[in-house]
Amino acid sequence: MEIISHLSPKAQRDYQLIQLALTIGDQKAFAELLNYYRDPIYFMLLRKTNNPLDAEDLTIEAFGKAFKNLHQYTTQYAFSTWLFSIASNNCIDFLRRKKRNSFQNDDLKDNDYDMIRTKNIPSKLPDPEEKIIIKQKIKMMREIVEKLKPHYRTLIELRYFQEMSYDEISKELDIPLGTVKAQLFRAREFLYNIMKNIKEKI
Image: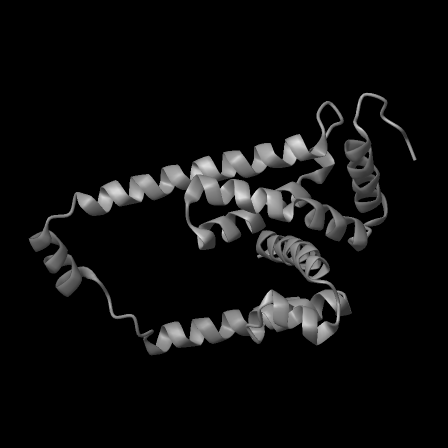
C-alpha cells in the first residue's frame, strides 16, 4: 500500500482503510473507520446540539455523507480532519434550520394558530386514493430491495420493514454493531442509486 509521508501513523492507518474501502469495497474497512470515530464525532455533536437524539442522527448523517463522498477525500488533510469538518458543517446547517423553524413558529399568534389548526390542516388519515398510492410505493420499495445483494437486503428488511434497532440487528445477525451501521450506509446508497435510475427512466 502507498505510504503518505506527511501523515501521522493514525492518519496513515485511516488512509489504508480508505483505499481498501474504495478499491475493493471492503465492508470491514468501513466498519473500522466508523468504530474509530463514531464516539468522538457523537460527543462533539452532543456539545454543539445539547440533544442526544439530534447528536445521534447527525452522527449517522455525517458518516453517511463521508462514506458517500469518500472518493473526494485527498491526503492534503488527515481523514479525521475531513470527517470532523463534514460533521461540523452539517451540524451548523441543522442548527440554522432548527433556529429558522423556531422563529417561524414564534411568529404565529395564538388565534392564527387556532385558525390554522382547525381549518387548514388536513386530516392525518389518508383517503382511499392515498392508501392505494402508499401500497404501490411499499410494493415498489420491496421490489427494489429484492435487487440488492442478499446481506444488504437482509439489513434493509430488518431495519425498515421490521423496524429493528441497530442493536437488535447486531444480535439477530451476530455481527458487530459498527459493521451493521457501516453496511446499512452502503445498502442505503445502493437503494438510492437504484431508485434514481428508475426515476430517470420513467
